[in-house]
Length: 115
Image (cartoon, rainbow, N blue to C red):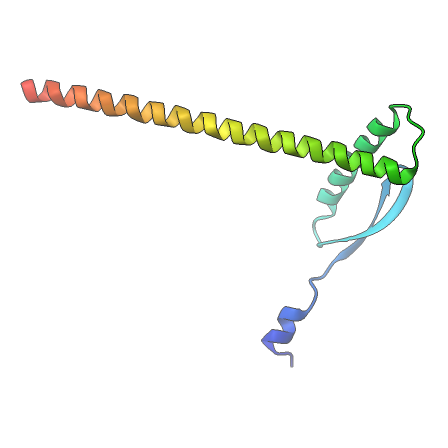
């Protein structure tokens, strides 16, 4: 019989999955049921690897992976920035809509008070 503490310290089950990046196969672990998501990630990363490799630079594999990581990090930062700007715009629109409704309610209240 295992104690709750022993259960908590057990590693989560994982699946071993073979993935191919830039023609090389790697074995990685993922949570069971997440294999499809991992395949999607591998397709994205492999596509970026090819994009960097196709620039014609004769670089080592290590440098190719590093440049790809930088490209992906740049895209991630740009996406985060765009989301933050979009959220700010959405917030500004909501504030304007609430202000408009507040003024509208005040106008209607005045009209009802005159009747």
